[in-house]
Length: 183
Image 1 (cartoon, helix red, strand yellow):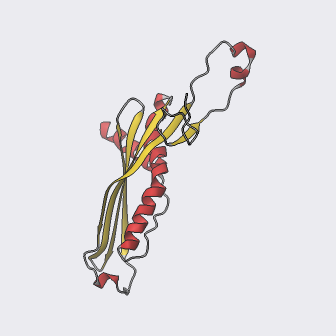
Image 2 (tube, rainbow, N blue to C red; image 1 turned 90 degrees about the vertical axis):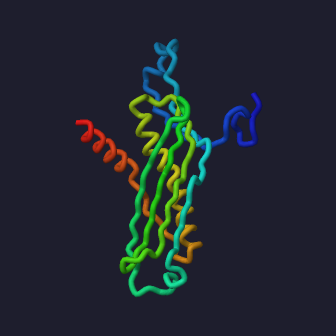
């Protein structure tokens, strides 16, 4: 099979691969287990990542660009959506919203959708949903954070550097809400 410049086979799409290997158990390495086929290793690959939508509004410019008496109040919104494109392929969309207000006036408002196409293979069914809604957005976040920081900087403000996001906590809260709604 031909190898591409990055070391992968020429027929495989390029992307980062995260191997989620489990340590071998003594039964898998013993001679008694030599005739059995070990379970396939779970893998997660990023096939693509892309900016789907970006909006930055600076409605009070140039007045809002002058030094202000007090720091604006900044509110942040985060949402994660995913959709299945093929049996092993998922588009995961990270939505970020930031709004700065001072004295009831909008200083700036930014909205973005940053997405990635992920291939998740050999995941146990009970681990697939959390992997898609926790690990995938965790991989996208640094890139989306940088784009939002650059957009606010280009808008004439200091870069908005978001704190890390607890995607596991968001997932658990979402599952609890869905469970309560169906109960």
